[in-house]
Image (tube, rainbow, N blue to C red; front, side, top):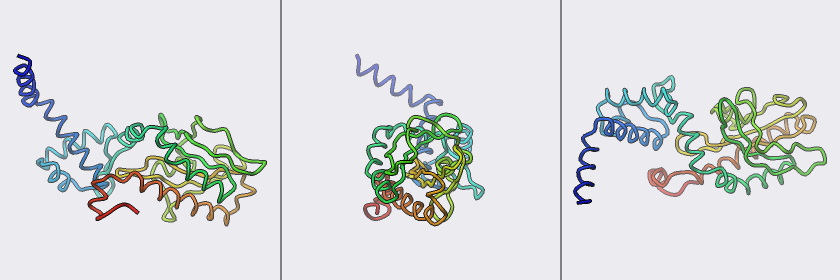
Amino acid sequence: MNAKVAAMTSTAEQSNPATRTVERALGLLAVVCDEGSISLSDSARSAGLAPSTALRLLRTLESGGFVRRDPDGLFHAGPRIIQIGATALGRQELVKAAEPALHRIVKASGETSYLSIRGAGERALYIGMVEGVHAVRHTGWVGRTIPLDGTAAGAVLLGAVPDCGYMIVRSSVEPDVSSVAAPITWPGGVVGALSVVGPTYRIDEERAEVFGRIVSEEARALSGQFTTPSRRARDGGESR
């Protein structure tokens, strides 16, 4: 009896247009996230959908922030799916993975290092920190939020990273404090930011560039840990 009920339920679900729409949308979203950036025609082909159906679903996903479309017409993972992905990774897991990098950054720079992710609204949330070694140092911001706009961590979380791979911002949230940040990425977008924060009088232009190279190298190495198995297979081996 139970088997018959289960079979009837499965058949009903398969014939339900709403269920089919959800399945198609999720399949299409998975294609976009797997590829990082993809055209409408390629995403439709990969998901086994007609281009008109794919476009309709992508527009719906875009309106919810699950995908975004760039000026070239390519689709990418949107901020909402990246936030969900960060939550799925788990704050504790991300902090645990980043902790060695935070310690290395402090050892190399002497300044306080932070890990941040996108928080609620247009804010970045600090979720990890290792204090610097100087008597005067930045500290105590884990659990606090800062604006995405106008901050180094916020800029990289928004994907606004210069070609050098890091962002330098001075006297934004606090006067006489400078920050240098670089993005942690996974297939689909930016999942977090590593940053160095310290007093501006110790972080001149030359030192800021040195710190930028330090955090960007650590962020790239950490990003490699979040490469999906399918992406590694397509790249022909393990991520480097």
